Image (cartoon, rainbow, N blue to C red; front, side, top):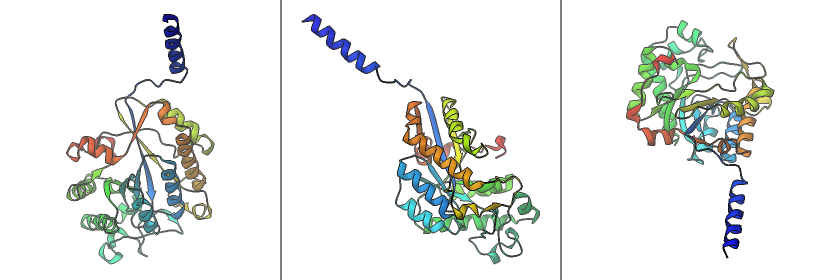
Length: 296
């Protein structure tokens, strides 16, 4: 009888330890996908990530032409945390957008034909008025709420809305007024994004980054995704630092994320994915602190 019991115990132990065991870790990763609503190709990419089951936060560009489609997608998927990608720039040649508040309401924020300026430098060279900045950012938040989106947080397209302390105070004021979080205000640590990594190396770079995630810190990965289609191929960044073959770069980021989901790369490394709804619930809005030391 004892011999039979020993055989059973050994069999159980062999079965358990024949499977790879994850070490217990405290690795936490928050994935934020920016520019949702910018174009159909970006929205399609976001939908693919949602359908694949990835947990992430979606930052929406309210002034853009494909905002309504983004709203429909996100309203159907309440598990995705939604943020407003506060937008004061319009950087693509032949695809431009202007203020939600209307050109006549915020004339210092637009060029001679009513579009936002393509760069931070050109925006500030036009001496934007702070009251007009607040009016426009408020209009973007209000439009998103009226469209039926459940907004959890704010962040900032190209960093323009928090470029200086006066602008940052406006963003903080609006976050307080609307009971919203602000991205990077919970001590998030930015890990190296895939943005400027060679197209063919993005997936390997992502896996290496996941391998090197630090424990006991809130890691933030900012992504820019899209489908490599004719719409995206036609978009050329007016900023000198803009990526060549931007469309391929964005699809490569999408594919790297999709591959990581399909191959269970996060679980294998003991990484817990969270979004801004989780973060707000865990830490509370009262715990936010301005990351002014980062300059961004």
